[in-house]
Amino acid sequence: MRLYVSCDMEGTAGVCYWRQCDPENRDEYPMYRRYMTQEVCAAIDGAREGGATEFLVNDSHWSMRNLLWDELPADVRVVAGAPKPHSMAEGLNAGADAVFLTGYHAKSGARDGVLAHTFSDETVYRVTINGTECSEAILVGALAGAHDIPVLLVTGDSTIVAETLRAFPWATGVVVKESIGYYAVNTLAPQAAQAAIRKGAREAMARVGAARPFTFQSPVEMRLETTGVQHADFIELMPGFERLDGRTVRFSAGDYPTVYRAYVAAVRLAAGANAPA
Ligand SMILES: [Zn+2]
Image (cartoon, helix red, strand yellow):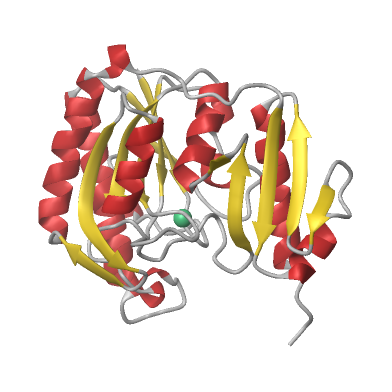
């Protein structure tokens, strides 16, 4: 049983402020990267108790070099470093039997979503696919679904867990903190969160028989609303993109993996669209 884990950081217990997740921050980041790593380890421990035997972990936050090697089990492989073409879903194309999403957070624009964003808080205002407003969990979960792999577990803040379970009702959700607002949470202590994740992971494995891959129907249409007009100016240059208004572009394809690739490319292009300081 091969498990793929995409791990983010803003949905880790205790996190409520950007600097806690910023690799440049020497005060708080070292502590929170350890909690992020320990939540991944807890998910792997629970999965192992539930029958998983192989583990590929994709470090999916910021520099994507967050996980502390000394804390990880020796039999885990890690996709590390950024940028990488498939970003938070890198390595999924190698195949897996199930997906866990840990440390996930509410989508851009979500009410009561701590540090809510979708890939980029600087450029992405909203992304919808076939009319569904997407979080990172949906974007990654749908790519897994396109490879016939179901999402079994999501951990993070209350807003993302509730939303993800609406899309993937067969999955198990572990809420490590209640989102109060963009910069505020009511959170479990890290050790309690890790215990809950381990238990949730074990339960998720027991429900694998009921799990289904999540897919978008063909044709797949993406509408991406950027935070600034300058971002859409450059995304529009890419073949296949159509400009709908100042901040909205549209892209469609017959299959979701093509749309996902277009999304990642658009977000990376948008990141270079601001005038130099
Ligand atoms: Zn994220």
